[in-house]
Length: 382
Image (cartoon, rainbow, N blue to C red; front, side, top):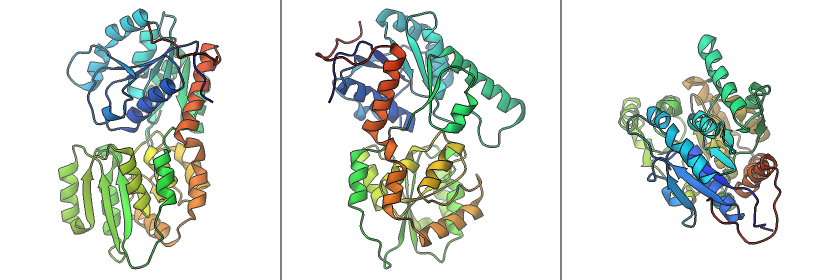
């Protein structure tokens, strides 16, 4: 039962409603808190973006004044405005959408009555990173965690890295929607007279490394497959050229950014296999979503956080980052030996949107020290 009249308020900070997973999680969280009767606002530097349509019209949105220029520098330049907003509107909790804004949020809340909550959205230390670079990155994240009242992590590996650096809590990633559950239930039976439907979802950028996946698929000319690539980004032209050079352009469809959650669930429900070739990730939302839709998954070892999920779902172990030959072998094996959908769905059950976001809500309640109480919805932030 929904309980109203929460005795604490939340401001969710998001740079802009972009096309990434952290943007969707921040918006889903704000919408969910609103539905649960929590006084909540969404604070953004830019109000426009691919995911703006996901914002509940009833949600109060405020703009954080920011200078122009490159995103990182622009975010640093927002500090005075964000700190002033914290002291003017006095939210009990200020939530950061992900890695890039965790330091900004922690410093803006410092010295006020507001508790900063950070979220780890990408690896603390990237795969293969060593030496002083890895040490400096880890030291930075540990410092931010000490400045924050709570840091939300998405895997045991991240929690272990921050174990002695403040309050780090492992929470599921809220990403499995009702539309995904319906897509899995409506999944057509596999027949031998159609191509294997393969899917990649993600920004067309170096991090996602679609080029390695294309090279892997070029090694499988004996299999009947078609690939759909959903996403937009600076490497679109280069990836199209890569398809031409590999002789697979007639098998690959670029469909652009898919902003409608139902449409994305439909793509995943129609796919036999999701390929996740990223160089680094925090947890890989698309991997979880694909499993929920009943699709097999092959992924690179972009983060230790995905290993247990793949194991629980009976999937091929993650392959080395950037290894096209290993990725090709894993794809061929996974297509030949698919795992029953019931096991895939059970492996990601805790990542259901409402179930996971209620875990966020309980974490906020414990942080604020104020449990839910019955009554009418509280007013917006002052």
